[in-house]
Image (cartoon, rainbow, N blue to C red):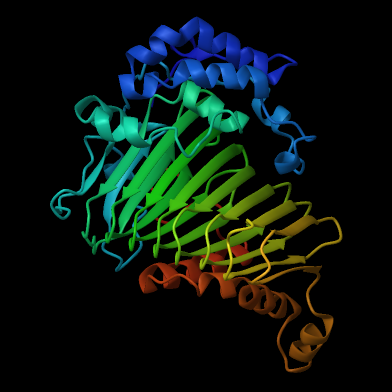
Length: 461
């Protein structure tokens, strides 16, 4: 996209990272609303008031203490508030499909849904995958019912900021008792001629008895400085199923702040994978609430980092009702001077009897310079529960390395085999076999230092 600085709206770099966005919104509110939809615009003023109270999170905020959010949001970024068109067709130059997965592929260019690159295959009747803005103009009732309800702007400054500034994004709606056999793949491409901030919004509604699998892939098409905020709101209805895989393969100059909110009705099933293969600075927040009995969730995280990369995953699972099950496993391999953080809180409220919950965070620091911060938490107010949590931080097993060296395996190969086996416990949880096999290949390339860009991307090579 040929975005010129003079044609974009610039965020002035100031000491107060919050004030600059307040001034931006107040100056450009009409333009923001003009290029969006009334159902989204209706939430902006309230979000502004909450953002004035909360601001950009600081380290003193418990959920954000491991990442300097002020530093992330301080620089001067352009914003494409005018919704300038793209100068290329993504499907002509970008191929990110997983072999043999046979996905329905959609593109988000920066934070705009690309209506010109829709898949040829048809989805089941009633299933919607569309621009959030365009769908809100045509069907405002659904958006008004669900939009900005889970992502409470009075509780999180990032949710408030995104609600203020987001103009488009993605809506996925799966009607009652509908099973979507093909995986829906959404490729998020960041491309600009200037440093760019983008604000993406995602709304997923899975009606009772419905099933859907989704794969999100984040990529940068060049080495500009990007700041991406993303808010996902996902509703999983009674007896419904959602599998959501989020994979990041971006660049060292990319800063990504993503908040995902889930609501699970009775007997629903959710599997959420967060996979970070290549990045700059990443902050992922996952907040999940069980609103109906008999529901089950599985949260998995896989992180491979080196150099100066930083990855912070923060999760909250709210067991608000009885007879629900949660399982959580996050694994990190940190090399070079990279830093990782995991904070996972499981809240079991007083009426949530018969809760079953297991939370594990396991980490390897390959070098002495790598740093890992781990904080698993259980907060239990019920007495008839089965809950466990654990955390480990260590280095590669010297005995195992020695054993393999004694059998003729080089030190480099032995190190790779141990790292590969460690991280694949998470990868093996992926239900889609073609995606699982593809990730085995990408993980191997990453550990061997061969994965700097997506191998199928004609923009990056």
